[in-house]
Amino acid sequence: MNLENTVKYHSPKSLQFTVSPRATASEALSGSDVMAAFGMVQSRSRLGFTAFSGKMELSKNDKLKAIQLLAQYGLKHCDKVAALRKLDAKDKGRVVQTLATFAFSSWSRSAATSGARCKDCHGTGRACDRVKTEACGIFMEKECNRCSGVGYSQLAGKVVYRVVANALSVDQWKRGVSQFYESLIAELDRSESHANRMLQLVTSSTN
Image 1 (cartoon, rainbow, N blue to C red):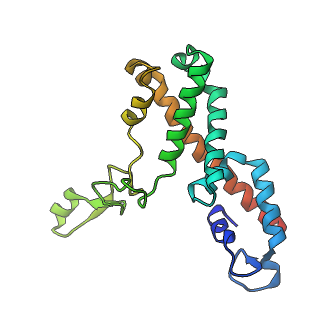
Image 2 (cartoon, one colour; image 1 turned 60 degrees about the horizontal axis):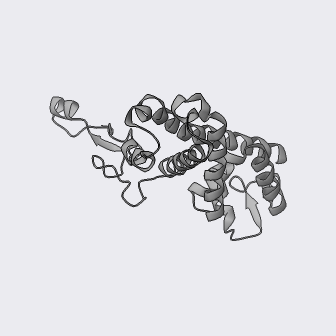
């Protein structure tokens, strides 16, 4: 079982959950097995599992909790950035919380998100390859350069900076804080991948 499979278990049509198409009884997980697996993964990869649930809008509480967990992670690492290290405790907490909120929002965006669709590919992730199209005379596609093939754009850094501009200068943002912000998004990716591996491990041993 992977994280994508967990979505359907929040509104099951029956009391029996299956990880794969039915073939033998050994391939089925009981409701208790699934809940136990979720609990184990949440304990081993709390941010990743909670962030995924929040991203998929399975729970508003998970979304808020994921942001809080990310902010806690950020506070543990923010002193590596000089501009953040120099802030007093109150401002540092406010800035890191703001960055965590925007990082989660950017990370969880999709082509279905209001205003998220890429202007070049309109959410498809594919765009015209003009060089190849002109060379062969037929329409050729390539991965969209603007969104890197995901169909939507992340929140622009300048949008995030405007919210924290009263605590940080443009130079401070460019020289370190913007990279810190990107590292929060990367941490969500890493955590989700870890949660996915843990779920696969747990459910494979349960089967």
